[in-house]
Length: 156
Image (cartoon, rainbow, N blue to C red; front, side, top):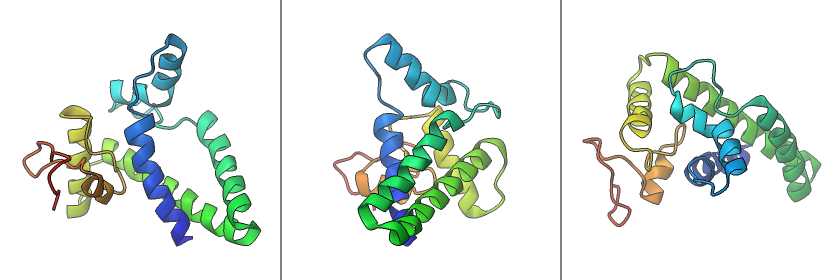
């Protein structure tokens, strides 16, 4: 389960960085991209707009379970897939909370502040919503002042 969760955190970061912020060349691809994630950036405070719609997330969940089973066998595959899917549910719940509630804990306020910086100040950094440590590892973290940390400089 832990390995599946770790795979989820990397998937969350890279999906958000590469796929969700990719600018497609064609009109059809732009419409698909807008449906999957673009509308979220256009209307980040709209509680009725899902980040990852069920029409995409349910088939993706099935693919994840089958993929882990093929790679690891039935028992280990189910365990890893469950860790991955728990990570997704934690991310989706946390992401909704950061947008539509006021966190009361220090960690919650920190995560909300950095995610709102991603939406309203600079969407080219701050891709790890539930796993901000990957932004430090890959050089896409916000600085403490709200500016970005250059990728060539250490984020520590």
